[in-house]
Image 1 (cartoon, helix red, strand yellow):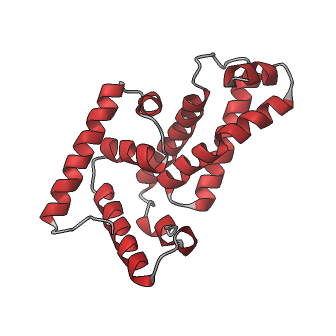
Image 2 (cartoon, rainbow, N blue to C red):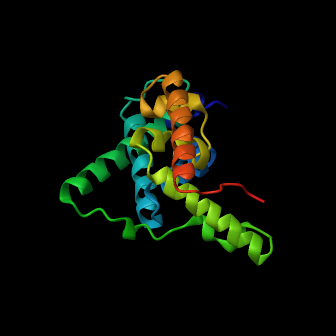
Length: 191
């Protein structure tokens, strides 16, 4: 069944249809949220709030069928996170120290020797630093594409821009990262 068919069934009272939608989209959505906020507890909250908003919208009959249910979910999550970080920025309480979670330092994800693991960690840390220096629009596209594993169509839908704009932002992000790496004499090759 398509997402749209499942939404119609759920709107009609079939809770199992929503369970199927959740199973189908939870991994990609949660991964996107976690890579964006870099905090497991905060990611759990955004994930839950995203599905609560989706449930409410569907049950109230306000969901409009567009054939892009996943993009719609991602957009809800995106807006929730933007609102949260804007509020934190206004409160001036946002700190990078709050983001202690680092996926690249999880030893269960690789089977290599200590030297190889150390090199991989260093490269990933360097790339994360470079991504962190990108303008927000470019950083967002990089994170959605590589960490969220989304297509440029999905990225365009989530960010509210055209596909060409999303592609352009990715291109400029890569060029900026190369320039920053060269300026800082970084060698970004994986062995």
